[in-house]
Amino acid sequence: MSLPYLPFARPTIDAAMIAAVGETLASRWIASGPQVAAFEAALSAFLGGRPVRTLTSATGAMEVALELLGVGPGDEVIVPAQTFFAAANVVERVGARTIFVDVDLLTRNIDLAAAAAAVTPRTKVLAPTHYNAPLDPLALADFAKLHGVRVIEDAALAIGSHAGGSPVGARGDLVSFSFHPNKNMTTIEGGALVVNDADEAARVERLRFHGIRRNPDGTRDVEVAGGKYNLSDVAARLGLAQLEHLSAWCSARARLAELYFEAFADDELLPPERLPLRENPGHSWNMFTVLLPLGQMAMDRKAFMDALHAEGIGTGLSYEAVHLTTLFRSRGWREGRFPVAERIGRETLTLPLFPEMTESDVARVAGAVRRLLRTNPKP
Ligand SMILES: *Cc1c(COP(=O)(O)O)cnc(C)c1O
Image 1 (cartoon, rainbow, N blue to C red):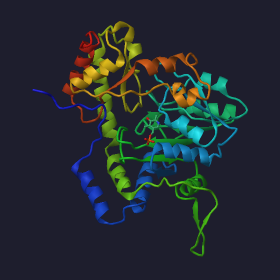
Image 2 (image 1 turned 60 degrees about the vertical axis):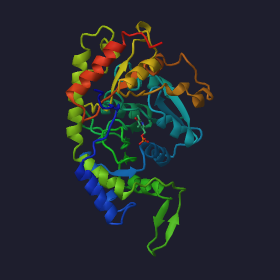
Image 3 (image 1 turned 180 degrees about the vertical axis):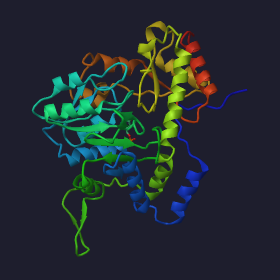
Image 4 (image 1 turned 90 degrees about the horizontal axis):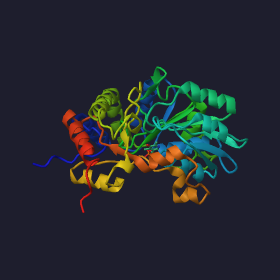
C-alpha cells in the first residue's frame, strides 16, 4: 500500500475558512475594502497595537519599506548571505547596494559582529532575517542606535514567533511578514509591514496604491510614484480566519519539531550541529532543516531529494547562498567570503513540517532520512 504524498509544507484550510472566503466573494466587494481594514486591525492587535499595513507579498512590503526610508543609489543595505533572495533583490531594485555578511550556523541568523564590521558611512539599513530562531530585539535596537541605521526585519518566516517576551513585530523598527502558503499562516499570496506611526502608515498606503492622496474637494493627487501592492478583501478574509489558529498551529509545529529531534537524537550522522537549535524559546518552527553529511553519504543532495520524493516525501531547499547567484557574482561576490552561508547553501535540506502532520508522518520521514543517509544511489 502506498502512503499519500507528504509535501514539505502545506497550509491548513478548513470549511469555515472556505465559507468565509465564499461570503466575501458573494458580497461582490472583493478588492481592498472592509476585510483588509479588519485584517490589519487584527494583525495590529496581535502585535501589541503597532500600525500594520498589508501588501501583496513580503517582497513587496520590503521594497516599499526601502522606498519609505528613501533608500536608493549610493546607499548600502546589509543583508545576510544565507536567506531567501527577496531582501537582496529589492535592495537592487531600488538602486542601492547589497552588502552581504555571514550568518550563524545553528540559528542561521545574521552575524551581528560581522554586520558591525561591514558598516560604512553609506550604510542606511540593516535587513536581517528571522531564520531558524527569533532575532534578539534588544541587540537590533542597540545596533541601530550605535551605527545610526534603520532596521527592516525580514520576518517572512516568523509570524507567530516570540522574542524577549513579545511577538516578533511588536517591537523594533520596520518588520515585514509573508502570508505565502508555505509560511505559518496564509492569504494565498500576501504580506504585511509593521511601521512606527500613523505618518509612516499613511506613506505606506500611498506607496502601495499608485501614490494616491485624496484632496478635500474629492479629487486625487499623486506626489510619489507609488506601486500597486494592495491586498484583496478575499485574501484578507482568509488571513483573518487563519490568524485565529496561528498560535495553535505554532504549538503543533513545535511538537512535531520535538518529535524530529527525538527521532534523530541517537543518529551519529546527524549530530546537534547538523540540526536546528533544539532549545529555541519563542521560535515559530516554520521549517525543520538538516545539514546533510555529504562527505559521509553515497548520494549527493539531489539524489537524496529524488530518493525521498520516490518514497512520497517532499523536501525543500532553504536556501542557496545569495551572494553566489549569477546576479551577485556579476556584482563581484565570490566563493570563500562567507564560509557558513556557503556551507548551509551546500548542505541544507528542509524536511516536511506543517500543523496537520501526524506523529507517524514524522516517524516515516525520519526513518526514510536515516535509511537513505546510509544507502547507495540507484544505478
Ligand atoms: C518567503 C520569504 C520571503 C518572501 O515572501 P513573499 O511573501 O513570497 O514575498 C522573504 N524572505 C524570507 C526569509 C522568506 O522565507
